[in-house]
Image 1 (cartoon, rainbow, N blue to C red):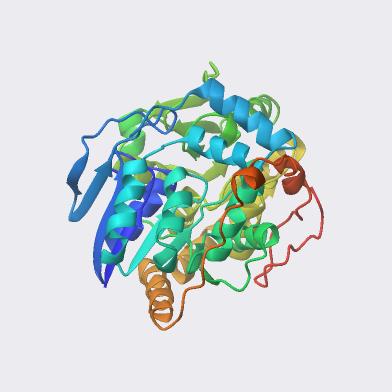
Image 2 (tube, rainbow, N blue to C red; image 1 turned 120 degrees about the vertical axis):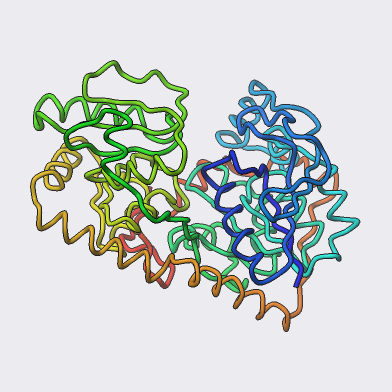
Amino acid sequence: MKLAVVVQRYGAEINGGAELHARYVAEHLAKHAEVEVLTTCAQDYVTWANAFDPGEDRVGDIVVRRFPVTRPRDPAKFGRLSTRVFEQPHSIHHELRWLDSEGPTSPALIRHLHRRGADYDFCIFFSYRYYHAYHGCRAVAPRAVLVPTAERDPAIGLSIFGPIFRGVRAIMYNSFEERAMIQAVSNNSDVEHTVVGVGSEIPRGSDAERFRQKFDITGPFILYVGRIDENKGCPELFRFFKNYASRVSRSLQLVMIGRSILDIPAHPRIRHLGFVPDQDKFDALAAAHALVMPSQFESLSMVALEAWAMSRPVLANGRCDVLQGQCLRSNAGLDYTNYEEFAETLHALETNRPLHAGLSHNGRTFFKRHYAWPVIERKYLDVLERLKGGEAKPMERLPGWFGRRRRNVAPTQEVVDALRTGPALKSGRPRSGRRA
């Protein structure tokens, strides 16, 4: 079996999000099939400027084919079009212009799929909302398997994505919450699918003391790992932690790992270490009292799974349905929706040793049962095997020139606001029945 993994950017130096997810899946499926990666020449997720040479490359043992991006993102244009489609009545033409402006726009990659798509048994596309996934799934619909990595944000309400969700051969969901959300917006419950998520590479020999000595950190700390920006909930985390440090705890620190596009508060108990190698990250998890996940928008938190794999509890933003659902299903984390809940749950993690030990044990068990790599690999292989015996249905066509320009599409924020909220049952129904 020959597979193509198609993703917006790819490389050993890209160590987070859907791109790392794609690399892990490519490397593990390569044990069972011939795998190639199709991607762009971009490295930076903000500009999408070409950084790699086009053509054939190799990352580890995987062949990588890179295709140029036609132009970097124009932030002003992208912002204007985002306002149009998210907040105002608009047309399908507006949505397609938004998709093109978001980037990374690579017609060369899509031409390759049109010409050579039949060379692959299946093409596994990562991240529904980007140019390569939208046009790529249309180019090779009978072979298209989609890993949406969808978050609860206005993009999920764009009407152009409904035919993609209904027309691909299969969808590999990250969580029950993601599945419930996509099925609600696209009515695609009849599409072959499974909830699979992703495993993680947990190194042996992580050393808490090595981390403390290297970075001169003593005393207890909670750990944040990831991009430090507004969309990840970091400003609120800073406010909540400073309040907690002044009112509740005299010793707990906040250690942050990751690149920052925000100013880090000058506070004696907030330490920003910047980007660190994976070994340091796992040493930090070994040393941390707990992981904090303040983001409201996640399709699956890989670092939360890593924390659970290393027997560390998670403190998560309860306004994120996915994180709340993962904490409930694992019984390995606590969640908060305001400062008072943040302070109470963090204080419980800091002072209640039996609670901390129980959550830690549950996290490790949850990871091994659902996210160990043999489990993930088997789910992918089972779906691909089932697809071999099925028939593809045709992808829905776009309206004609005039139809695409009718301003009869509702603002996407209205679509998202109408979706039910709360963690999902395994049936896909939201547990709470609340609406946003």
